[in-house]
Image (tube, rainbow, N blue to C red):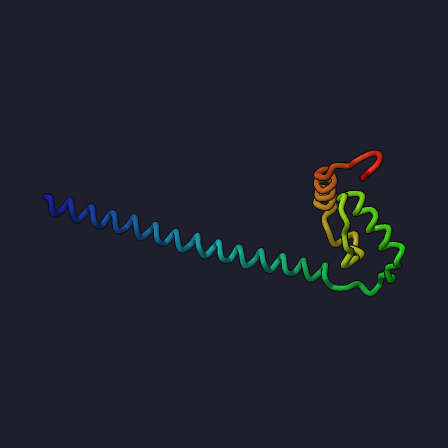
Length: 116
Protein backbone atom coordinates (compact mmCIF):
# COMPACT_ATOMS: atom_id res chain seq x y z
CA UNK A 1 0.00 0.00 0.00
CA UNK A 2 2.78 2.45 0.90
CA UNK A 3 4.71 1.40 -2.22
CA UNK A 4 1.73 2.28 -4.41
CA UNK A 5 1.25 5.65 -2.68
CA UNK A 6 4.96 6.41 -3.01
CA UNK A 7 4.87 5.51 -6.73
CA UNK A 8 1.82 7.77 -7.32
CA UNK A 9 3.56 10.61 -5.48
CA UNK A 10 6.77 10.24 -7.52
CA UNK A 11 4.89 10.05 -10.83
CA UNK A 12 2.69 13.02 -9.87
CA UNK A 13 5.62 15.19 -8.82
CA UNK A 14 7.56 14.20 -11.94
CA UNK A 15 4.65 15.24 -14.15
CA UNK A 16 4.29 18.55 -12.31
CA UNK A 17 7.99 19.44 -12.46
CA UNK A 18 8.24 18.34 -16.10
CA UNK A 19 5.31 20.57 -17.04
CA UNK A 20 6.81 23.47 -15.05
CA UNK A 21 10.13 23.03 -16.88
CA UNK A 22 8.26 22.95 -20.20
CA UNK A 23 6.41 26.19 -19.43
CA UNK A 24 9.66 27.81 -18.25
CA UNK A 25 11.33 26.99 -21.57
CA UNK A 26 8.30 28.29 -23.50
CA UNK A 27 8.30 31.56 -21.54
CA UNK A 28 12.06 32.05 -22.04
CA UNK A 29 11.71 31.44 -25.79
CA UNK A 30 8.79 33.84 -26.08
CA UNK A 31 10.78 36.48 -24.16
CA UNK A 32 13.81 36.06 -26.45
CA UNK A 33 11.63 36.26 -29.57
CA UNK A 34 9.90 39.35 -28.20
CA UNK A 35 13.24 41.06 -27.46
CA UNK A 36 14.56 40.16 -30.91
CA UNK A 37 11.41 41.48 -32.60
CA UNK A 38 11.45 44.72 -30.55
CA UNK A 39 15.14 45.33 -31.31
CA UNK A 40 14.43 44.73 -34.99
CA UNK A 41 11.59 47.28 -34.96
CA UNK A 42 13.64 49.86 -33.01
CA UNK A 43 16.63 49.51 -35.33
CA UNK A 44 14.33 49.85 -38.34
CA UNK A 45 12.84 53.04 -36.88
CA UNK A 46 16.30 54.42 -36.03
CA UNK A 47 17.45 53.84 -39.60
CA UNK A 48 14.53 55.93 -40.82
CA UNK A 49 15.62 58.82 -38.59
CA UNK A 50 19.34 58.57 -39.34
CA UNK A 51 19.07 58.47 -43.11
CA UNK A 52 19.87 61.97 -44.35
CA UNK A 53 17.21 63.67 -46.33
CA UNK A 54 18.41 65.06 -49.64
CA UNK A 55 15.48 67.43 -50.00
CA UNK A 56 16.44 69.64 -47.06
CA UNK A 57 18.17 72.93 -47.58
CA UNK A 58 21.48 73.60 -45.83
CA UNK A 59 21.09 75.02 -42.34
CA UNK A 60 22.31 78.57 -41.98
CA UNK A 61 24.51 79.89 -39.18
CA UNK A 62 21.71 82.19 -38.06
CA UNK A 63 19.37 79.23 -37.57
CA UNK A 64 22.00 77.44 -35.48
CA UNK A 65 22.40 80.56 -33.36
CA UNK A 66 18.64 80.86 -32.83
CA UNK A 67 18.32 77.19 -31.88
CA UNK A 68 21.31 77.49 -29.50
CA UNK A 69 19.76 80.53 -27.84
CA UNK A 70 16.40 78.78 -27.46
CA UNK A 71 18.02 75.71 -25.91
CA UNK A 72 20.10 77.91 -23.60
CA UNK A 73 16.99 79.75 -22.43
CA UNK A 74 15.17 76.46 -21.82
CA UNK A 75 17.93 74.54 -20.06
CA UNK A 76 19.75 77.48 -18.44
CA UNK A 77 23.18 76.16 -19.42
CA UNK A 78 25.50 76.40 -22.38
CA UNK A 79 25.02 73.81 -25.08
CA UNK A 80 26.90 72.75 -28.16
CA UNK A 81 24.84 71.97 -31.23
CA UNK A 82 26.28 68.86 -32.87
CA UNK A 83 23.56 67.98 -35.34
CA UNK A 84 20.39 69.57 -36.64
CA UNK A 85 18.07 67.47 -38.73
CA UNK A 86 14.68 68.21 -40.20
CA UNK A 87 12.06 65.57 -39.43
CA UNK A 88 9.34 64.53 -41.79
CA UNK A 89 5.90 65.14 -40.30
CA UNK A 90 4.78 61.59 -41.10
CA UNK A 91 7.80 59.82 -39.61
CA UNK A 92 7.01 60.29 -35.92
CA UNK A 93 4.08 60.15 -33.56
CA UNK A 94 2.89 63.63 -32.67
CA UNK A 95 1.37 62.50 -29.38
CA UNK A 96 4.69 61.09 -28.11
CA UNK A 97 6.51 64.13 -29.45
CA UNK A 98 4.27 66.63 -27.70
CA UNK A 99 4.31 64.60 -24.49
CA UNK A 100 8.11 64.50 -24.50
CA UNK A 101 8.40 68.21 -25.16
CA UNK A 102 5.93 69.02 -22.39
CA UNK A 103 7.84 66.79 -19.98
CA UNK A 104 11.16 68.40 -20.89
CA UNK A 105 9.88 71.95 -20.65
CA UNK A 106 8.07 71.36 -17.37
CA UNK A 107 11.16 69.82 -15.79
CA UNK A 108 13.18 73.03 -16.03
CA UNK A 109 12.66 76.20 -14.08
CA UNK A 110 11.96 79.20 -16.25
CA UNK A 111 13.27 82.38 -14.64
CA UNK A 112 11.71 85.72 -15.39
CA UNK A 113 13.75 88.81 -14.90
CA UNK A 114 17.51 89.31 -14.55
CA UNK A 115 19.92 86.45 -14.60
CA UNK A 116 23.32 86.46 -12.93
